[in-house]
Length: 269
Image (cartoon, rainbow, N blue to C red; front, side):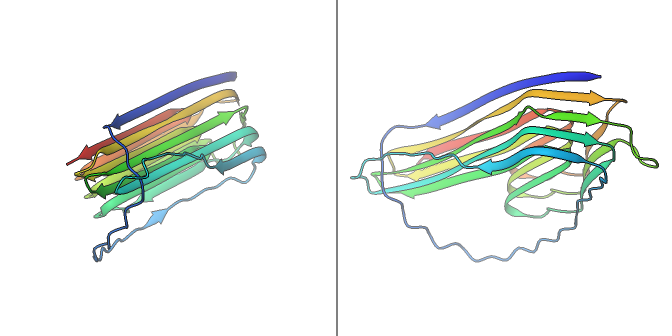
């Protein structure tokens, strides 16, 4: 069975208020605290017969902003990234497995977890935070991204003797009791795209606070050939509980799934 898959998703969110500002506010001295984190991460991968040609790389996006030079202070935070897999040819005969167990719990602040089993999966968690104070100041926070799979060819052939075609990704007893922000991506399969973005801007007695989170996901020109039913499983058990704040969770099994969670918050006070 051969199939051609093509998907495109474009998402943009913008929250803002009016005004203008300039100059970076000096960072405040971080508070001193000690947090003990006990992690036991297991990420296993087994594949002995894979042929791969093509390109996979990361690149940056330049974003420019212009502000009033007479402003008292300006705080700006930006996160911009690109993930691409282009023109790859993949022959798969063995199983893959990725697991997270008893990990990433009892955390205060920010936690990002990517767990993937399979091939050419794209995952990322980004957070941009800015804060400023002053009657002629402002704060800007923005995140943007592109995830692209284009012209890839997947062939799922007969498994090696004594193995199966299982692609499994599991998270168990993890990411519990978190105060703050948590981004979780869990995928089993090929060509899946998952993203969690958060942009926060806070300005005290200011004229500007703006936050934006947006991006694009593209799956096109993908050819899939299978000689048997695909066997993919993505599971979460006993996880992502007792969270105070924001959580973005993506869980997918199969081919070319696209998932995004974006949050943008701007406040003046």
